[in-house]
Image 1 (spheres, rainbow, N blue to C red):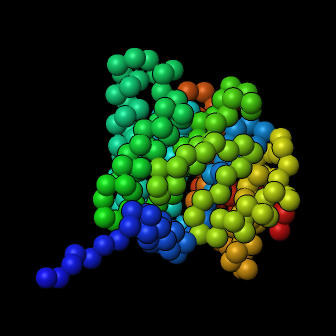
Image 2: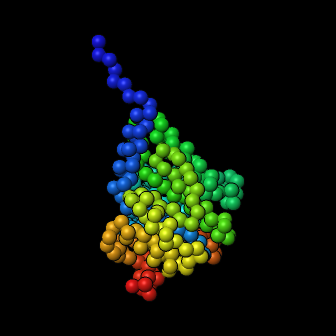
Length: 229
């Protein structure tokens, strides 16, 4: 009689976590950072159509790293969740916290119930009327959720980028300063310049009327950083 192959639950979870981490580490890092007028999100991304950063709702943005198809599916489900909740209740009831909790539950269910975990990390960020009301939530591949202040880094060599920002970050920076520091942090692990055409940059600007999300095109990125070159 052949005994069935047995793997302890602890070992299975460790194997899943290691598998997900390896997949995520293959990609590039992404930085979200508070600045004077809102939140800036910056990622190295040579593609002009396969975005890592999107608008989810009026004041809320989503950013993902890892396997594109997996975080793209999560983004779409988040848009549906936000639209439905805003329609049934009110637009003010759609918050980054409620969206992040929904993502956390969905990702956690996949991690515990499926053989293959999601190879992704995501950020859900919301700009407040004042800086103290900003919200940034980091959700890991196992559904773990944490809130961040000042800045958050996901994907790639996130630990090294985070160490750099802990030393360099300054509150109430201008948009230009925040953009320069964000791309400089990404360059720390690359050891080479990053062209503005390979940067994906978006902001949540609290002073913008209506919807707060705006993408920064390469020409504007170049103008914002030209005084630092």
